[in-house]
Length: 334
Image (cartoon, rainbow, N blue to C red; front, side):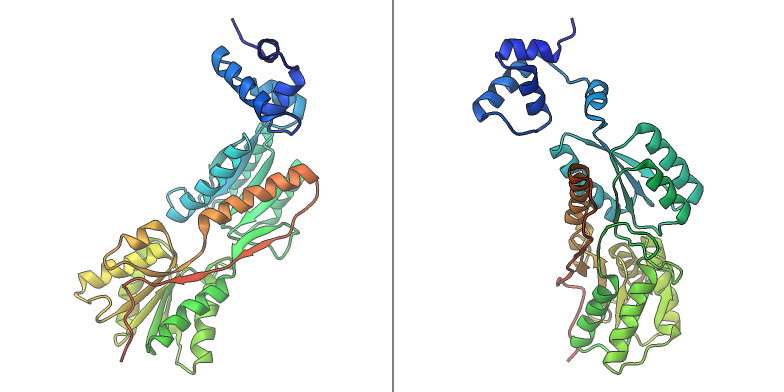
């Protein structure tokens, strides 16, 4: 026999409205009453009917998240943060792996519309007109994570990529390095590729150090691209003493390629990464890196969704601070 919210209210000797407020984390009841109702729920084995709750509240208690690479460790950190907050609000996350394919992104947005999600977090990609229009037509809150739009009025959560890349490069310079190269994302990537390249170039020029096309290999952020990128970089810039890799995954690729070439890190080559993923402290040597608080950024993006759901107004974008995490992959030159 199916247990209903009416059964819970009757056994707990409270109103149905009180049970509903407790289930939906609304105010208006004492801690004693909450404990009593939760005990009855456990005793009766009551499970709220999500469909019925959605019809009443006009909410489905789901947040759609679009990510370009499901295997990315950075995306895993973002999703971890988002899930922590959604679960605290009694909601769930629907993760959609777009693979940076426009048609696949469109199909997922149509699916999220059918699912009537309460809001959407759009991560790490350029927001195109067609995708913005689809989300706008849904009439649901939208937040950009690790990206921003100069064309559409959508709040975002990110770090200042140009400034963070500048800090990473300047850190190497202050350690005495002058012959510095970069393995970066593509120049066509206006979100994290070109801004990090711009930061690298600006730091080099501000310290009157030479920077040319042979100093930069704009190839990508993955481990394999770090391996290939460093192989190309060392070939065209053989007397390099330090590398700024624009992601930790690429930095590990640099470490791997250097090991295969019998180049010792940090004795012969210093390496700094970007992201401060958990694997950065697991590498040999442990990787010095630029930290962006990815879990906290994921949390903030979803909190902004719930803030907009509660107030029906937009929220301010948030730029998170970056920091340099010093480990053992950078050596100071005497």
